[in-house]
Length: 205
Image 1 (cartoon, rainbow, N blue to C red):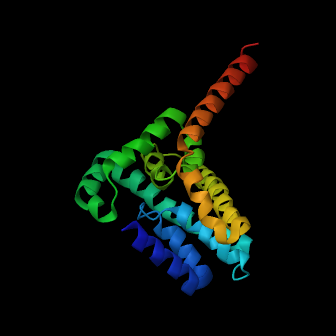
Image 2: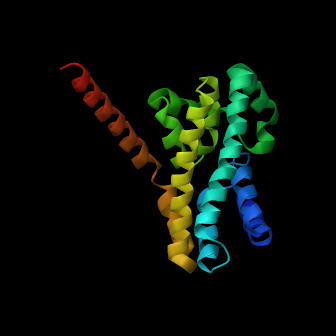
């Protein structure tokens, strides 16, 4: 299943050019088995052959991701948690998304609050669904958009740049990306604790 989706995404990029890059980034929000760590390093590799501008594909990939993020943010905002849970119980199997996946993203949001919108973009699967609890929480649209754009730009820029630099060995980035989630989560928790300590000291002198 994943192999077929990846082949489809890569062919869409090769045939569709820049619009194909935008479309793949957008579709990733609706088919989480479509892993960005297997798509954007490939796009970077293709850019390294001179078929794309590296900056162009990073920007279009980020904008495509943001458009998909806005969709899920709107779903969370307007449908609410209870109705969206019913939605996934009915249609989630078609999209290979379960409400338990949403709850995982929600746990990130509860733990790290608003910064989770940015940092969640750096974690596979969570990055797709972190928009939903942001919608539940009625985070202001401008704030959600800025944090989502920045996090997506960092993630897509890293993956695409790695593929650009690695060339034909672009697949070498995949195992590293798939195993760094725990390190990122621990690092984020430490960052939040350090910021909280600094904030407390700064305002209680």
